[in-house]
Amino acid sequence: MRVLVTGASGFIGRRLCALLSGDGHEIWALRRAGAAVPHATATLCADLSSGPPDLTAAAPEAVVHLAGEAIGAGRWTAARKNRLERSRVLATRHLAEALAQLPKPPGIAVCASAVGYYGDRGDERLAESAGRGEGYLAELCEAWEAESAKLLPGGRVAIFRFGMVIGPGGAAPRLFLPFRLGFGGPLGNGRQWVSWIALDDACGLVRFALAHERVAGLLNGVAPEPLRSRDFARAVGRALRRPSWLPAPAPLLSAAFGEMARELLLSSQRAVPERAVQLGYRFAFPELPAALSSVTLET
Image (cartoon, rainbow, N blue to C red; front, side):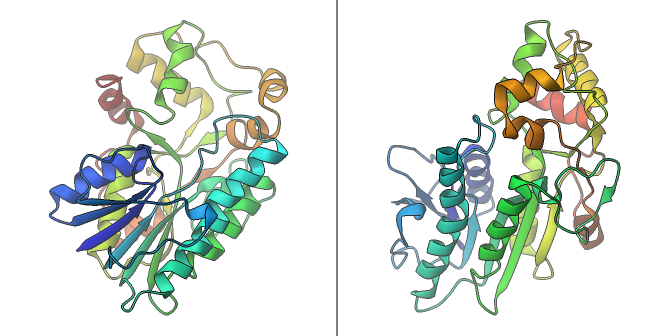
């Protein structure tokens, strides 16, 4: 197919474009100026948050919408929240407007969201049927998903609520740094659940959705085995052969990162990929140690 990928120069986007190209698809990368996408057949430079781009030349048969400013790159100031909202909610609205102008709309849109939709839910097991949680991130994800659902009126849309994506780049360098320095450990009390997914499985779910017409609606983009923060830290320590016993106190994290720390670092989401498993997706990395081993070889 001819596939339009937004956020193509990002962490997931670059790997996905390489894999889709290997699958034989023609990749049209929608990116901001200055960022290269090596495996794209063609590129379109546009800022979706500024307005709808002209997609006539691309004429996509499928769309993968990954665009969005990094959620964990710093404190959530008022200005940063505005950028987060524009890069997700407004950008998705503009993409829908652009797709509506095409003579022939794509047959499938695959979109990103996040498990932050569920808020801080303690030990509750969170399948896709679980309701929205409380907090800024939950509200942002709800608004983001609402716009994504309108991308193809009457068409097939799949929305993945991704957990922490483990792969070379992304959050891995920041995650690994304290462990490499000998100061690694769980965040806060270590009891909160961490929902994660290997980069190749995040991309694998997108490829699965493109290939199978029964994949639609909301799906959790997470590995089958979420871990408590203390167990997650222990696995990282073992992968790096470094200590993993020193916790990062919640008051210190809150003082440093404010609301972002409380909602992104210290909240608990025990999400499970119930629909992906029911639909027949087979995870390449169902357990964290193997996923971490594949990353440490490249970082």
